[in-house]
Image (tube, rainbow, N blue to C red; front, side, top):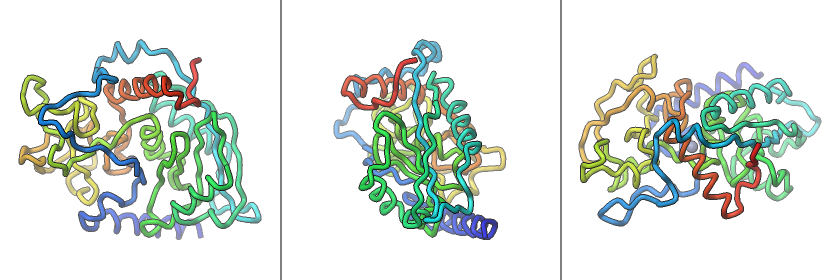
Length: 308
Ligand SMILES: [Zn+2]
């Protein structure tokens, strides 16, 4: 059963991801419905003064170590059974993956608790029904980052991998407890946008990286990180990514300028890209995360992040 379902899942996923452009925004990857602020109303770019937009590794390296306590929630059927049980060793793999992905940001994840909910209602169900159920039953620890791992979500023909719905709660399905979607969702939790944010907006992120150029807007558009290039969502365009995660296309941005997309961009955790390519956060993203935490802590959010 497990084998069949997994393969069916991959089959449906490839169908979904290979379909029309209108599906790109919802296909497969994650539900991230805090609206991604895409453009900027001013004609001139006015960067958010709460961020430095630095891409200096020495600056990133100067942040002190932070600890994020994690509570994992395995979701079983009523009788406690599961076709793909969330074991403690699998959770260790998840924590190891997060620690390796966020190491350069000096963020350390510590497993605080592994809990189980035995309820067939949410074992394999709709994503919105799932997070409503979790909220209504108060299955969360307030001072931790809560990670829920149900068997599957039914959305997008069972291909939805996961999503975040609050500052300290997100879910991925059991196929992705140790894949790039896990750092992707934590990236959202810690303030990162998709690297293709607003790629179709009027004020899309421009390809130009010369800060003196009047068209330069990387601080105000896209993901607001300057060392991730302007990039479109590559869902539905996997033929433009080769087996080494190199971009081989000739797409243009909203102004008609050909994209300059590096392997690092294709490999970015926050890109809509080939799932197996996801393996990189940039220094600029790391600094964005650390400054996001710093900014939000003043507002008494992200209480689950603590100093060492
Ligand atoms: Zn996402």
